[in-house]
Length: 63
Length: 244
Image 1 (cartoon, chains in turn red, cyan):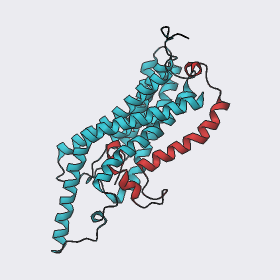
Image 2 (image 1 turned 135 degrees about the vertical axis):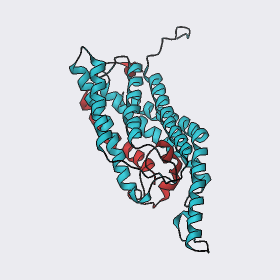
Image 3 (image 1 turned 120 degrees about the vertical axis):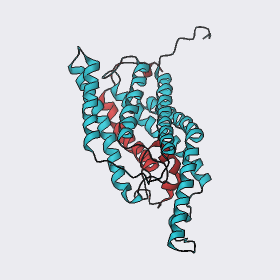
Image 4 (image 1 turned 90 degrees about the horizontal axis):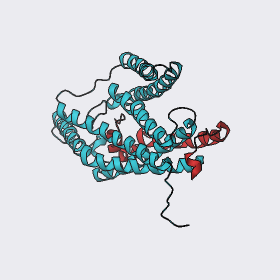
């Protein structure tokens, strides 16, 4: 736990795999929630309709 | 260590998203309902004007997800969005810690959350504010989405410019940082095209209330994310009372 609060920078060589693996995945989830109109999900307008109220209230363009 | 930070970020984001969803359900949903009622009234009037027989060929007549489903979807959407944002936030924290920003981990988390809210939410909101159902032309959703994302990117890039400026002018870091942030953001606000698609006759008070509710939802999400993540990375006081 003490590692969590250390202030020495984490070396970039250790960061890079996490950034490359996790960030695209996380951004994909955010994209599917906020913007997908069927192009990536291949679910037609289903995601749009399911996330509809969330999109409006998160302030992203919905329709 | 990175994994531990990421897990905490995901959990903090999920919790923040669900809290924001509760807020949005209480404050935002009544405005969404009011806007949908107006939208349906407008469609009904249009259908009646076109022919006496009610037209059922429009896609809005066949709901893919019911209104109850969409209200539940609010919690799903904000929970997933919160977790995703929290994960990216945690990895950004892992990259910045010890390099940029305040040294105490908790302070860095709080400053990052505030900065991220301004760059990712406030900057695009000022130019392209949230719209309730019935506002916005479905034909232009593509270009409006691109413009919105451009504004998010400009907010994040301006943050980087601000940090660089603050470091270059150590005598006046706050003034240099503020200038470095506001200058590119203001130019983008002025240069990027306007979007004006509010139908004539849409109640101004409803539009205002919806936009305020939307901005407040994001504020709740980012404030909660910052608070939870700050708790997760703050050093714990040694528990002297506990034996062992």
